Image (tube, rainbow, N blue to C red; front, side):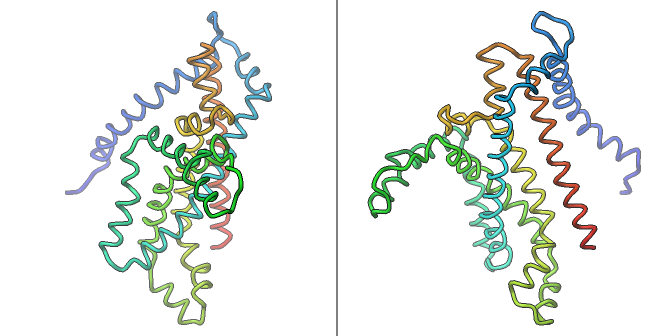
Length: 280
């Protein structure tokens, strides 16, 4: 059956309607609310207050820094696992087991997993008790309720996203190109750096963007594992809506966070495209 342009447009009606109803419409309301005064009327004072406050900027920079390190950790842990799964796990059952182990934690609530990390990283948790028992430390480390604990919790949750994104691209890598590089005298490490890794970059870019975006917008993990010591923008937004009852400031923070995130992702993609053109 041949799909005509009319049929294609008809098939797109559902996704477009879903996007408009559940993203554009709520986002338009959010943008409009960010220009509203508490007593009604339009104003730019909300953006002036947010952009001129060093506290809000500090929370935003902290949010972006945490998201950056989460992306780095997910890449450093996820890429080797994806590479092993595709190129070294010969058995189909081994691959399936790896995928199952990756996906299974996703069926558990983020709240449950966050409290699990409290048990692991606490002063009397598994990590500190293990280090104390083997004599590496004399007093428990303050791992919990820090930036490290937030990064650890988010990386654990988002690691499957990176692994599956890279795996989907590595599966399509032509093995003959790697074999050709080896036949020409390239060492395995050289063949990896010259052939495999460049061809897998689209998966790395896609995975890192998804991980970064989800880390920036994360609320549950930072709110539980920060213990009130680390402030991120999603927590501030929640506080503006529920504690200080300033939905106008909360909406403004949401718009600013989204705008900065999109700018950073756009710059990241632009740099990647330029490097691809230069390499080509």
